[in-house]
Image 1 (tube, one colour):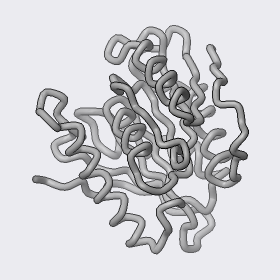
Image 2 (cartoon, helix red, strand yellow):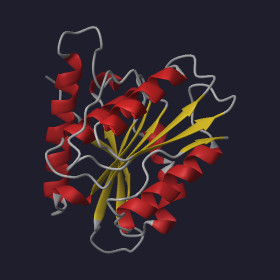
Image 3 (cartoon, one colour):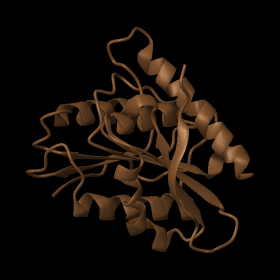
Length: 216
């Protein structure tokens, strides 16, 4: 099978070896170029992070109609992430994932499935997620951002995923964007940057409230 490959990247602004790797997962039918520009908004507060857009084979992370397609997608992403971290001599815990649409679905499920803790996961307009059940001890902090006018992945998909993750002991936040369809907007991108800065650069305490929900 065709493997995931590295796409466009934004080097760490610190000009030295990156201390963190933030991998961006584009939407179905798109490419890494469609999402890497968002990193320009986040890099100033994460100067030691390299932002890397991954490229899905044929523009699709998994085929939802294929039996075991999602599991194959998660396994392929795991191989890609392990190789990308090894190439940069970074430990598995110095990783964050950001995804849009199908890339968001994969970011959430892969982030929960990885054996070691991921710094943070941000998912824009993802779903359906099924019923993700995290292992509380390794579940990364997650921010789910979704428009309430999303015609591709209904808002209910995000709310169901949030409830499932929280019930399993995961730390999960959500942000609902009023009037937004299947897209990213400025407020969501800003919130994602704040979340990444807070959780990648600064370690959050285990007793933080995981039931914040913001409607804007």
